[in-house]
Length: 278
Image (cartoon, rainbow, N blue to C red):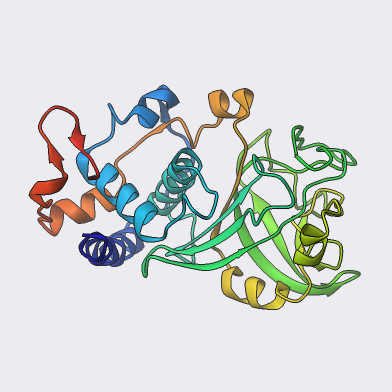
């Protein structure tokens, strides 16, 4: 069954990329609806739930520590940005799950087209965002805090922390100041598996998502140049006010499935609730 789901989702994602590439650019103005409705699935089409659950199960993300809520939010933002032609490098989705301890591998680089986890490793948060757990976030200069929401990867450079990558925040009031704040992805010796194994608290940054030095080049080279990053935390203010999370739009993946006339396996169809997983 998992193989069937994964094959379907790979085909769907390829079609999604093709359709999104032909759409004209538009601004990020959106019609909003209640975010809770999307989480319960009442305003989701069966196609969307099918795609989400296929990928979530096929990539074994629950065992890797990522909740379906975090994955759903990340996928929704990815699909919205894809529909708006904001993403220049489709198929890749990076999630920083700041609801997890910094001692956990809470950075996920996902290949949605192939249904694969490319990287699952450690990532820092800002020193004033919290200690082992990040609990406070900011978009302000000199706050030394991480920012929430959706960002797009940009260019690389060699700086004080070596090979690094700039980021562009696209949510006004939440992360649109990250470039001015010099919040970038870079490598670090204070974020690694050895510290986690020794139960030593991970080092914290000035707000940058620092990753293990041994992996930084591979990760940056994979996601640089216009892919989607989502910094997740169940913050009520962000969840209520994010225009992306509360956007009402037609998901490109749903369009793709409809155009491809994807037939759901009978074992996944529940006439009362839509799509379920056995």
